[in-house]
Amino acid sequence: MDFQFNSEQVLWRDTVNNFMDKEVGREYTREHDESREFPEDVFKKMADLDWLGLLVGEEDGGSAADPIMFAIFCEAIGKFSLDTAACIMTSMFTATNISRHGTPAQKERYLRPFLRGEGKFSISISEPDAGSDAASARSTAVLDGDEWVLNGNKVWCSGAHLPNATIAILARTSQERHAGFSIFLVPNTSPGLHIKKMNTIVRKSLGTTEFFMDNLRIPKDALLGEVGKGWFYIGEHLELERLSIAASQVGNARTALDDTVRYTGDRKQFGRALSSFQVLKHRMADDETELEAARLLVYSAASKMARGERALKEVSMAKLFCSQTAFKIAFNGMQALGGYAQLPEYDMERYFREAKHGMVGGGSNEIQRSIIANEMVI
Ligand SMILES: Cc1cc2nc3c(=O)[nH]c(=O)nc-3n(C[C@H](O)[C@H](O)[C@H](O)COP(=O)(O)OP(=O)(O)OC[C@H]3O[C@@H](n4cnc5c(N)ncnc54)[C@H](O)[C@@H]3O)c2cc1C
Image (cartoon, rainbow, N blue to C red; front, side):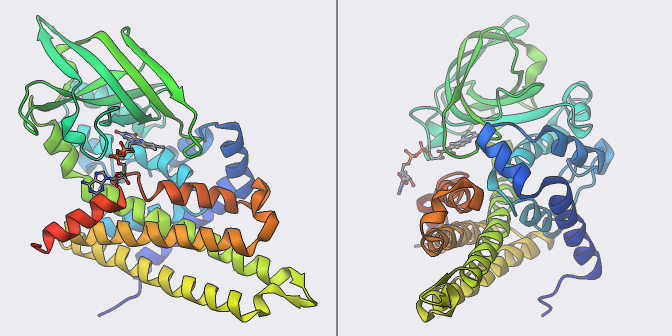
């Protein structure tokens, strides 16, 4: 069994990491977090490098990367901020849906501009009373002549307010629990759609929104794929999505731990470097060990998926363990940096905020445990 990347994977890892160091970096990330600005120029540069199409089929202008190459990408783009990673990754899964199930006209209208960096996607599943239990969502879509009429209230829709964003909205076309959902592609400028930004302490660059659909009328051809298949389409890429979140958490935790090691090496108290105190040394050794275990879970799940095998349990284990590890490392980093951890310019408070959200977003840790337990036939 080989635990090493092959030469193509090493080259890819180094290429994306170099891009992140040169084109993004710490200051840029911090500024965009503070100003709540989307990293437009980075998004466009990634489009120019054809990276936005990693999960899009070659026949639609993408590169159909395998799950290992995709995990390498996500680990690297999460290195400074999970928010930056989300700015890129969030659109990618709807692009995959359109590539797989969209009409030629939908691909022309939405997919092509996205691949050029001129359009974005957000995905709207959650509602005020439908979070972990997403299948209890109540927003409706009713066909009226040549138009669908949408009504309801959605929350936590990341990136829905951004310029040129199209929202993939999950709405009920019948009352069946799962087979009652369909997906609609709705430009965010559509009349009848009222979007309000939410004042979150995470995902500040991507931004998160609540919106109301008040007799929102969209053409019949806004339906993605078939009526009643929405839940299935979202489920199709759930494993890849959770894998991507886990991989970006590993990348971010790596930076948080490196920052802690550097700070405790430089900072002197009682005439010694903080890192010479055994209590701190051992804590960092534990963090290093758990981070390596987290990484291995990511690439073990990715390898299974790359072999074409189902990896529901493995991906949930990776997401559960990586989010816990990222949070623990950021928590320990906050302690090790003492008072300085409270200053944004030390970045640790951002890692800490974002790692906490990582235990809820993309399916909470309790839900991941339930999935793992179900797969164990408990
Ligand atoms: C910043 C941000 C961005 C987001 N972006 C999007 C987005 O773009 N699109 C979108 O559709 N959604 C998005 N979400 C929503 C996200 O997916 C939900 O927050 C998540 O699914 C949890 O739902 P909830 O917040 O309603 O919590 P709840 O479901 O109310 O859960 C609250 C707590 O109860 C626990 N719990 C719930 N059910 C169980 C159970 N059966 N067993 C044990 N424990 C349980 C949960 O684990 C959690 O700890 C975003 C959320 C945030 C905060």
